Length: 310
Ligand code: COA
Ligand code: ZN
Image 1 (cartoon, rainbow, N blue to C red):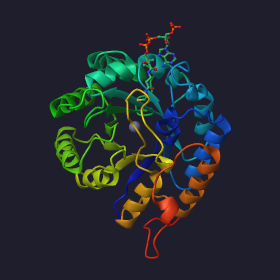
Image 2: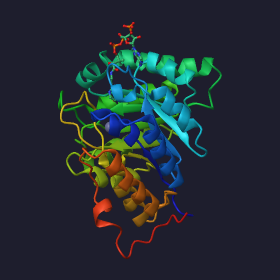
Image 3: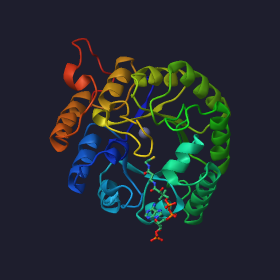
Image 4: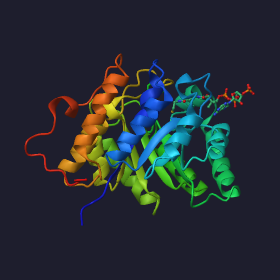
């Protein structure tokens, strides 16, 4: 049987949070629809942060509502505190990705609180989900940012990452996402950390979130695959970056990641040509943004033989 891999689009959240131009909600929803037509089943559609902090997401409720109406899409949202989680529950989010950082300095810069308070907020989020009778309906992902290093603090101890994995797993995470927020990870480190984490979490699925700031993104994907990871975040055109992590830049490009996986014989369920057509629209929607990724320019090779044909 062909191995299945899920590529989760995060361009609408990680991608848009760093750019100045506000993308209208109807373009965001067109983006979601095209992505689903290309075979994506999960998109991180927005972030429930205060609009005063990131104005791009002032339309979070509208975008989530529109995304939920798209058949075949699991609409995920990002939250960083309980207030954001309550907004997300009230709006009927289908999956909530809660982010905290393994770097104490980044957690303070990003969410203005110590890591242990973020862990407490995660526990409260799970309890609130269960209290609302949504266990089994709303999936909660625990995302550990700056797990491979931090532009503010520098080194982040692997022990800290493992402790957070344990705490989030014990608190009831349905998924654990280990994130290289600033593109510090190298393949050997990825093999070491995912190898260890895979042995700790039992049946909880692992996801990976890589930024390509130093050109290591796809090499890291391959290493995470070898460690058993089957869920990858990626951003169309390689947009992305945390506004509260100095020097952060884009995620691995979705189109390059899908090309890599399909070339290796892994089924993503994504129609590559439709994805490239959507990528061209992004150029039109974001004329002032520098977009990345190789495949939009080079196009697939003559011998590319994707596993997925829609
Ligand atoms: N959505 C809307 N409003 C929110 C909110 C949310 N998620 N979280 C807090 N607020 C409001 C509070 O209600 C309060 O409003 P009030 O002054 O009218 O009473 C105000 O914001 C301050 O609340 P507080 O809990 O003290 O928040 P804070 O100032 O400590 O900020 C965060 C915490 C998480 C909201 C803030 O640090 C943040 O938005 N960071 C953004 C991080 C981010 O998006 N990073 C990129 C992705 S990793
Ligand atoms: Zn990111």
